[in-house]
Length: 228
Image (tube, rainbow, N blue to C red; front, side, top):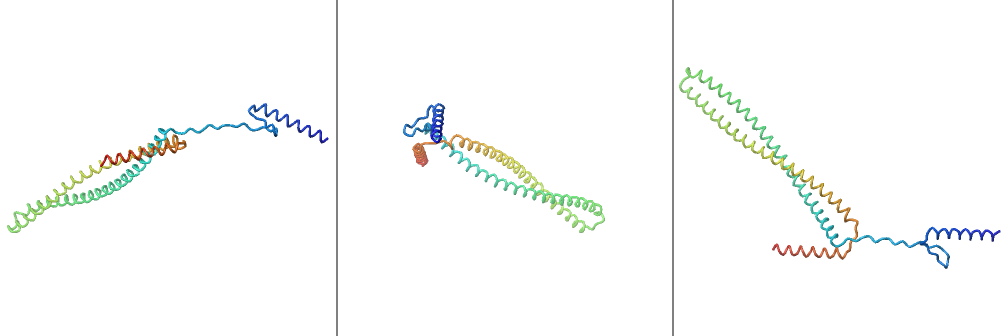
């Protein structure tokens, strides 16, 4: 019975072996142990960037990093400028409020002078000469003071209007700066994604990298020498 079982086991192995060989023609049989070896699969080599491609990727990376630095600096300028514009707006609003108060007071003074003049005209015929001259001088001085105040208000109003126009122009420029920064940020992010997709995962020859760095150092030295 044992011999029969052994014979059946050998038959089963032979049948399985024959099936493996039939299904896998590339399989090899080791004559020593009569086992099927796995076929050797050669993996394709990953492509290596050419020196020109590597140079382009390095330049793209450096340009993108430089743009990030530039955008950060421009963003700081924008924020600083925005704060200055807010301070200028607050100053002009306070100055305008003060000027409006002075204008209201000046108008009240003007109305009071007109009333005082009418009263003076009505009382003048009955007044003593000394009183008449004193009242006349008082009203004349008061009118002169009013005119000086009125002229100062007109001048300040023109100045404030000019400053408001300048502020409006600067706000428009600041808004344009914000739009430009927004566009630059979007473009920089697109460039970063492009570099990541086309450069970050590709292999390169370190000798090519060293040669490119040497080229760049030589170019930088030549530019520095030319600028002297």
